[in-house]
Image (cartoon, rainbow, N blue to C red):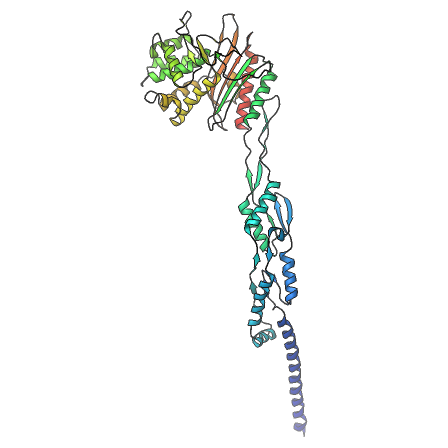
Length: 492
């Protein structure tokens, strides 16, 4: 009897379990069917998850993501841009069509089986598809961003009445190529829609030559020197140069004024002496040359000229050499010794001017530009075996000779005039000159220099003339301040 009661119990239990299983399976089947009508879990379109969404919901999400503004940051300044402005449009219908095709390719029962056992969802990715023109993005960056936000570098500006320049400011410019790619990456990303634009930093330029001219003129005006001043500067690393003349009466004065060259004519004499000599040089000759340049000794100058060049006509030979170099306003017409004859009267474009007269000496004259260009020729010859000296005298002037000329001038250490305006230790090869004239006064000072500086090498020549008297101390300060301003121009 007991066995008859137990058997139906097991049967009903089995039936109940089967019924419950059927119900649960049906429920899961209905749930799976509902989910299968939507995009499957784990599906991503353009890296945007759309699993569990229907077509309309997925389209809305994709539009919301890819039509949302991107943020580009220019040097800390955020700028929001709608993708449509850049011509960027996600091709949602195309991407969802691809996604839907992948949705229905999985067999129903295989998918249901995976669903029942909650197996790991396989991520299905559909790549982003969008229409855009890279040129339109680039053009926008050029016309709207770069044009508006680029900041040009500001050169150091002269501080009025001083030899100093205010500090310049570096500039920024948009790196168009990199910024275009960065912007496009932001448009294509659903999450990284903020980008710091790539910028180029532009270095601080040197002050402009017009600014330098203004500064030099202000220095002359502030000094109170009411005579004639002429300044020549040549940048030896480029073609930039400055040539200006200034007179206290404020009347505009053209440069290339004739000045007494005094001892500056010893630079042309040194050039001609080296041209005529061949190594090995007699020790006596080198000693005379050093005394001529470094001590400005006139007796040594005459002795050197007569010994090496010509006993009588050496001044005219030196002059001919200068004219061959194109320095038509430079001449030496007689030796330095008292009572030396005037060998020739020279008329030059500079001393024939009628608008300005510095009463230049009949024996030796030059201009700031002539002396500056000669110093440049010596430099180019020594540094590169180039320039006018070697071109004019290819068989007589060599790179080694030019370097020897510079070496001799480097030892001319007087600590005043141009040399007073550069930092201690600066290499400067130069020659200075002034003379007490027949009235017992000095009227003209000159200095021609080759300056080696960290910011660039340059030539500087300054002449100053006063018809009454050129007093040394104020003239020395004037030369030093002009020299300092130009040194700062190169090394600000």
